[in-house]
Length: 382
Image 1 (cartoon, rainbow, N blue to C red):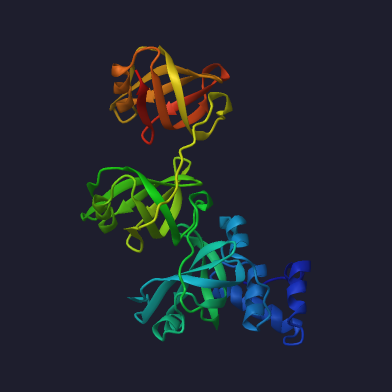
Image 2: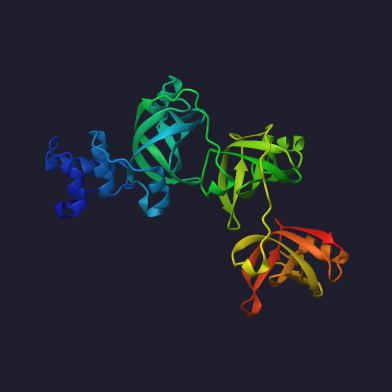
């Protein structure tokens, strides 16, 4: 790939070169940039190639992990970065055979700073840092590399790693439920068990059998659903509602626009002897806004007939609309599928509690509540 001189020398590229002009001539710089783009197989633009050259000569400009994640888009694949962070997880080194038949090695680590966490991939020679014990939990590192789209968002492919110092006695920091954001990894959190679902078995596409279970945990800042896989799902059987637990090495992602926590083979869940405070917030009807989950208490003032319908997959669904009132207002509530049966024991004037109902704009531009798979209903007063 041949670059025209005027294509190369944008103001930003010139600024990068200024840090190198005592080490490289402009001609040498341009040649190295062209070689770097070829080396990266086209997954690297002129700016990123220039930054990678600067990194090789020790001329770097650090960025934060938060800046990488917040400004990420697939168009930025190959962007060069320099980051300082603390190693908070180290995965097992995997060996494999490359296309040319030579042996290869790869390992993932997770690094963190005050702004976030990001997965980093170490290839071949860089995995020696793990084998030799130079890289361990708590180690502060400087790394140069490039960012690409990974399985759960942006990740860094490391090109250079420098060990800054070791932090003895490292323990991951617990965060609150409110701090959990989509895409976060290596999450450590404590909470009170609010609900426990059944553990179910399923078959994967490769024919193996897996297990999955869910719980809901809460702390003083909120609550979150936790999905546990395989061996971790079996840990649910030793829990009871009201227990306090510590979850570590979990990751977060959105499901139906709601952030949930996932615990896989790297994660752990364990009971702890600690009273984690939790108080369920009840929202007055007048304060409900669209596109959020709410807990409400109200008196039943209306029940419509059950409506049955056919889903796209041919299965049958049910829905019934009720209306409730509190001291601040009235609202329509749609109960879906198995929740329809709740109306069999209802009479007008009874008080009900609804948790985790989703608010959306319905007919006549009124806000309605939808009671679906993650919601609960409770009869408080007959």
